[in-house]
Length: 96
Image (cartoon, rainbow, N blue to C red):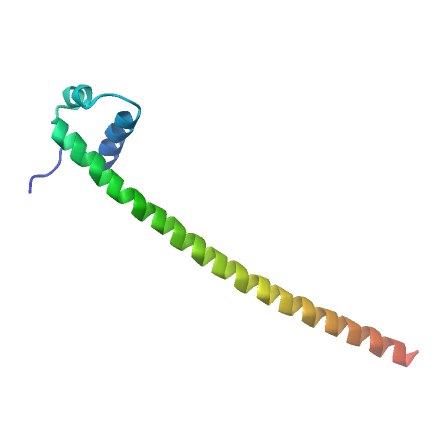
């Protein structure tokens, strides 16, 4: 398999230009690649977008799980604080 003349970032820039409305013919002349190559790059990029979305979805799910865990822990600590404060106040009134 031949090595590409273009880096991933350069390909992404070409795809961005394609999404802005430039024709495949104009882009193929500008960059010296065939319209087939440009179409293949576009398909390859389209295949990667869902994986990026799934990464964000997975990350969001992890953050939501961690958020629930932290809220539960905070509620437990708040309850402990309330009971300890009540016990301390109750102890203080007994001595008086």
